[in-house]
Amino acid sequence: MNLRKLLWAFLYTFLILDAVLLFQWFEVSQPLINPGSKRSVQQEMQMDGIEYGKLNSRPVSGAYLSGDDDKNSRIIRKTLAGRFNINQSGNSLVMTPKTTIRLGKSRQDAINNAQKMVADSQQVVGGKDYLYDAFLTQYGTGGRTRSSESANASSNGYTIVFSQKAESLSGTPLFSTQRGRIQVNLDRDFNVKNYTQTHITNIEKLRDISTLITEQDAVMNAYQYNAIPNNSQIVACRLSYRLMTVVRDDNIFSPVWSIVIKDNAGDTSIVAINAVNGTLIH
Image (tube, rainbow, N blue to C red):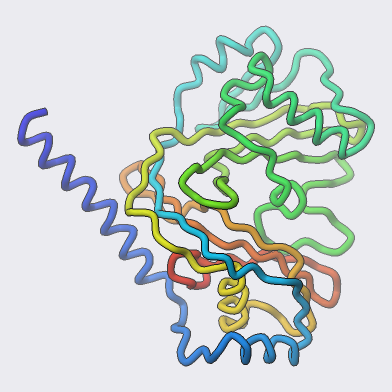
């Protein structure tokens, strides 16, 4: 590599790091001024009727990541063309089986058999890069879900989600993004209607791995941002990588705590807290 190319490579790296730091600076919706002790915050939450189980205070680590959208569909088309009709929408491939694939007689059967399907290289290419994502399968990706609904179930069928691994994150090493996901879409009889697949490639750490805020800290920060309504319940938390911004076609991912909240009407919503700096993500 000549000197000119080397200088451009360094400049490109600095631009990405600058974008990460600027995003951190501007995403802070309000400062956490004088938050008080954890004990006093917990007491305030109890007085507001907010229920939660034991929150983990174990230190976890992670780092900002960058990655590219995988646009090479040639291997998938070559491998699966005999079994699936394959269509492409952007970077997402849609595989529709040419013959019926039934995954069982119940949701649990379907989940178990979907995991076997994703592990089968004749049905899913690169399935080893993904893990079954119970969190997204049950709660979806965000928004508000009414008590009478399930985030990934409807009268038309059911969706099972597999998320791509993000190895540098301790605990739950998954991406939580449409850019690295397999979604298996079923009808009401648990037959596979189709599955969609996206993949992230060239994954790199942008900064050294550092200590992140804990699950306990994330919930308390969400409360101090008034993101948890009174008389509600914290039903689940999980740490994963979420898309933060895009710089010159490079996707920048941040470790994020996702907190599932059920209000007194039984409706659920998801609040996101940046695991690096503790800020609320809108």
